Image (cartoon, rainbow, N blue to C red; front, side, top):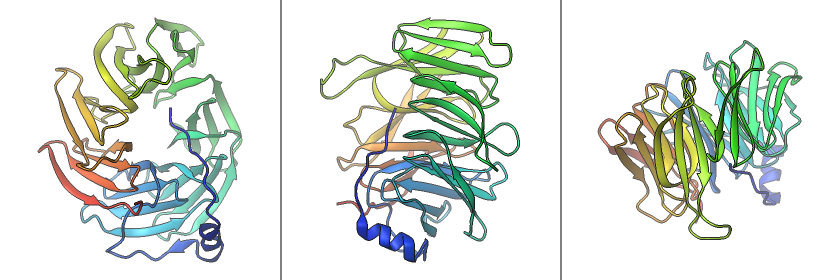
Length: 326
């Protein structure tokens, strides 16, 4: 799990007050601090990126050109997400301040504050007018209109399926419990597997991560395991990896950092176990990544503030947007 760490940017806060939307230019660079989140629009034409530099940026996926640049939050932006119709963009900062913008006009819409510090992931809910936020305090389903909490799953580590019918909870790395949300029935207990990370989009698989390196040992190391949520049986296992875990929308691949010191992401074929890697030639850590809706592209963000677009089908880099961090 990744958390946002505070840095005082007094000059940037002055800019926020004066100019909430910064004009886009086609020679723009990426963020000036870690890329904390990336999200494709539902039609795959836009890419939203968020950074610890307080900015949210919108990019044209086809050209790599900057469309809009929002001085969005007073703190580091932790996550961004598009609404299912692609008309709204949500962002949340380290103190739970949730903001919305109209994608077409870039105008702000009413926002609110959720009762969650250090949020890590954000998405619109399975039901209309809901938002789902997850972090080190668990998962919250809230109204996207009022911010009122509809349901909360409290745990040190939690993953909620996209249909919100299955939740995996873990208090520590010794066991993960998979529950049926509607009935409250315990479906499976996975022992010694680490923490739940994410469900596949069809809800049939759960990824868990277990840190295997000793405390303070560098570089850190861990093991990813993919489970069948119906049977509770292991599907595949990937050792010597680290970082954020994401399934491709077609549920054929899973993305994981090769390790925290490596500037690349490994894409593992769940059925065959084969993999390919993508990333920077420079020694910049990968911080976040996300698949396009058709699972053909992946956007990768780094600690240098840069963004790289990778074609999974051909195994080649489409383009790279340099970061502003030196």
